[in-house]
Image (tube, rainbow, N blue to C red; front, top):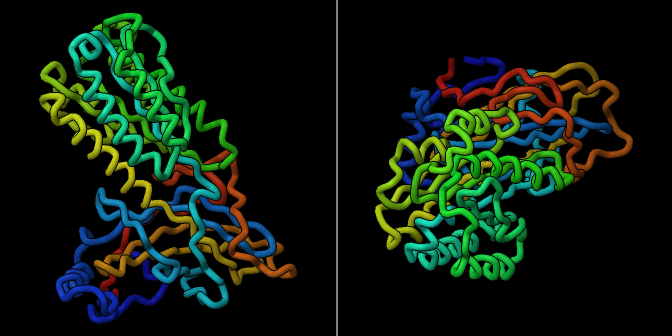
Length: 374
């Protein structure tokens, strides 16, 4: 456990703000002595630039649940074990959109078992609801697959709701080229296409979500399951979520989990299809809220410095921290540091959520430390 800065001596020091409930306050006190009650804070990328700007892009989660809505005052910055004054640092939370782009691809099975079995209408209705939810905060693209070796673009990546609806409506009378199911190949090509589209955006941090809908297993055998697994596990997709929705008895949880290793929804019949799509859309919306871009003006003027950023959820009282190092050689005004300046992240070596590579040197991604006073 780190002891680089003073820890609270009692549970009372960690009680949430007055608006929190008595239950939340008691939970916070108990959490001081239990690592399982801690948040996880992970650095995605960071940068520093003259005169003395520092930016840190990171995520905050409580177990698998994202923590959204934290304010600048919910974070405490330490440099070399000492608290950095909020007044001196002018710390602020910038909109993550200035540095990060997020796209979701909906990859839809339009093989013969869908188009010839009167399932297209239920699928279109569910997909429209999904696109409306996710499209409020990011671009959504819709692509179809059947047994052929190529995807068909139904709707390109767009934030225009009308364009998505019009494209999806055409799927009601969709006629595929091959009634078989090239599921493995579709996932492989879907990830590649999602990466190509994200690469067109000039923002340095890129996050993609691939949502694959299918009613069965791969029948075309154009690619093996191992080839699909190999593609999914590639390093360039580390910042992507791979989710899957299944319907019917022809695909089980195990097979669906191979397609969507980050989360699945499986329903027995098309009557529950919209619910499955809505659950996945809700998951994507929640997970978008885990991102934070903290900007501040460091008081450091020279040399390497150890930074710790501690997050506290005022609702639960839970805390967590990340650590890394940066170099401040040549720092100091004039001109004055503006914390609203857009970040200068390194485009060539982004850092993933597991803490590898990137701008600045990584000291480590630290899961939350309990405040025990030790």
